[in-house]
Length: 348
Image 1 (tube, rainbow, N blue to C red):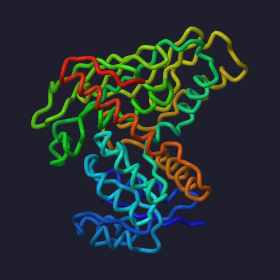
Image 2: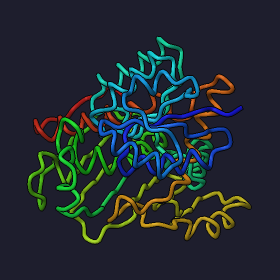
Image 3: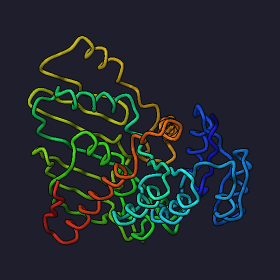
Image 4: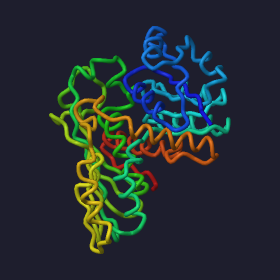
């Protein structure tokens, strides 16, 4: 079964979606739409697909069963809802949207039309992330006491100047946390469970002409009782691989992009040494630490394979709408705490 896919938006990330779709088992890129028909034509030429002059025209194409939304973060709502109302399944590049309320609108539209909704948090699909999840769910850490995420990346002033939407609250939804660190926030929530309360500080230290933060630190308490820290910045030259750490009474593990740099448990299994040897040096790119285009598309391919399987078999994607909303909800709570100087209670 081949599932036709259309892409909305023709910026940098759309090229990764196109490459990923080409590598899927059952997906086929049919066409693209961009507000600039000229840009859509250029994208179509490079990716051997149709260019549509309007979103309505693309949504009306019977060959297209699913839409991938690759517009700026704060412009996901309109095409996602339109696609759902047209009966198309919806894949949205992270974040799902830039507020929980807008996320809810997309989720509701997809539920009302009985179409699948997925969000591209590709880090969940890496083997190393899956091993971390299995260890947490299997109780190998004992009582989990800490869960931390560190994203110390670098973005030049030219990066923010390259698009009018970059660095704006309306279309970027935030800075280092919402745009760059959201993958690590999603991983942390997936591994540790919901957050009960958060206290944060943020600032804009080295970049000009942006509304959003380029540095933020948050202290968090998880519903399970564990504590943690989220650090995110785009001012840390030359940029380092993103890192997630889990620690407990019987084990500790550190994930750096796709590498497991620590994997230590009180009760060793026969497989642990093999995991330590196999999961070092897995990261083949810069992980986006200094260059947003320095990532592979293999993670996106796995996201699309999962999405297409969900369409074919009728089950939910691994990262569906409610899962995609969780990181946005936490990030917005962190922003609220940083702005007000008060601890924000999420209920957990």
